[in-house]
Image (cartoon, rainbow, N blue to C red; front, side, top):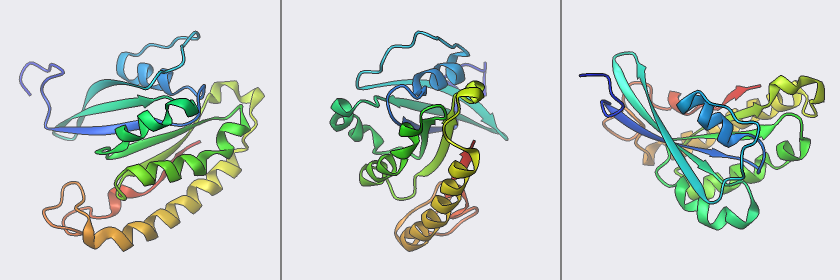
Length: 186
């Protein structure tokens, strides 16, 4: 990998952060890419992105992470940025049930504009504010498990038409279908 700079990488993966305004997407991005956190984050206008290169096994992967605006007035702009994304973090605020209640709408928007094979992770953010928690762990966990099952069925239906990462042909190769399961970080 040469001198270990940000420019040395084997793969570039585009990942989008989606969810309602104020759930903490920008702070997740800045914590992951720059190890920074700000209590006074401003509302994202349109889309911003940062990168971080991580070593996975022997491969250097450059994560290109797009932070999308959560406000309704920016949705028409941000939906174009879903195209080409291989992953999405759907973020909700554990202390605001309303942000969790619209998770299905965010998923629909994502699937309307992204590839059917996109990997989606449901992220309950602000777990440090557990005393103000409004979304029960079990409620979110059940949603994530149901989504994983439905998503797997959907992927099986599209597998013959999709090429998965790391495979030479559609639906073939090591790990085909395994990289598309839904995860939960609750």
